[in-house]
Image 1 (tube, rainbow, N blue to C red):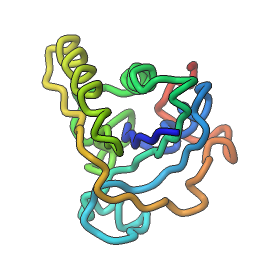
Image 2: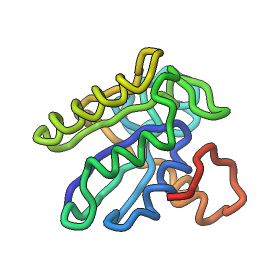
Image 3: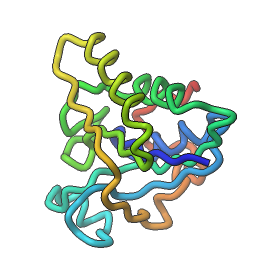
Image 4: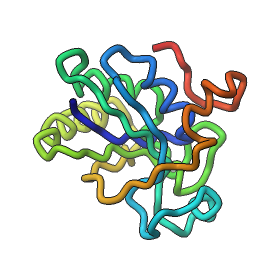
Amino acid sequence: MKEIYLAGGCFWGVEEYFSRIEGVVDTEVGYANGRRENPSYEQVCTGTTGHTETAYIKYDENVVELEHLLDKFFRIIDPTLLNRQGGDIGNQYRTGIYYVDPDDLPLIEKKMDEIREQHREPVVTEVEPIKSYYSAEEYHQDYLKKNPGGYCHVDMSV
């Protein structure tokens, strides 16, 4: 199994979207690459922790390739928007690809080059190794499964 962390605005929709893709075996939402240990949602929302709302994706690389997951990721975000997606605004809503396996970096960089070629505006999606990740509170996990009518900026058609 392989792992990747994807930040694309509100983590509820990103998690739900990827949970529907064949080959994705587990998802979770949390806070990535910030400065505070084990932050709460309220702390992250202040914009002072440096964390971004992130979906953890565990996938079977024999069923789905990282390139396919990245294609899907860029289908649901606007990589040119800084610190916002949909109606969500703040640095916790920035977009990012946070990798676990350094061997994934060449593929990620290739995909980023392709995305840059498709946009006139600068692409602001971060690409970094995962440095820290803290699971979000239980009520955020599988939020849209628990609350099917809940807010979401992501088009769920996989």
